[in-house]
Image (cartoon, rainbow over all chains, first blue to last red; front, top):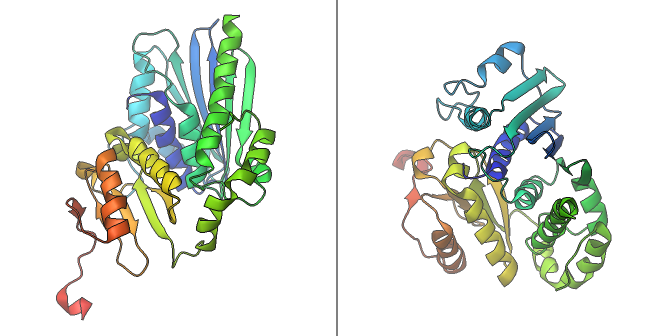
Length: 184
Length: 133
């Protein structure tokens, strides 16, 4: 995994497999605390306390096509290398929240990568799921969600290849604006 | 093209898009539209599935092709990631392995548009001769 956006793409697949109808992705950067957190909350089927304990084990997976499950272990490894960690809370029938904390200025922290692209790929590939993105940079928030985008597009499919580059630009420019606020 | 910044800008922009989109909307029927599924599990993403998906989306938008791209999970072909499954209407689905952005464009240009087979097809089914008959 070259960047954190790839981890997001990966971890959200777990929420999709869990049958979530609402997935909220929050990226929180706090330069004062030197912290970058990624929090993914879904309303999927949730996990039992036993499963929650096992998901960070690379040899645990719920799927049947292979015997290993590396998504969460890789995320945990990356987080721990930067002085952070991954915490998972889950309740059967309610949903799951996974939080990964990274030391922002740690040299082992991968770059965030193209967050806008990761969100747009996930949203357009799963238009039936309400996908929410919150980008919080030093307390300033930019949020976008599938439902609002659908309403703005008024019938034009959100997964149309002509639409996705526009969404990418829109989200990217808002993220960049929040980052530039800090420099002023 | 003007930069869009807000959902209002998006609302305004969508009028200019209608011609491209109508091509796909008219064929918004699973029996008529080509479906591409990029495997996006941990193995696929780590191997570069994101670049493959972005390349395909750009190409489809540029040429206004009647193709939809979605994401799939791991099919057990971790050794051959990134993998792409292509379902052309009326044909059995085909899974291509070791797809990079260049192969991704070949899949669209050669397999989807011209019907030529290209290297890198993985076995998807184990139908015997008897079953086929």
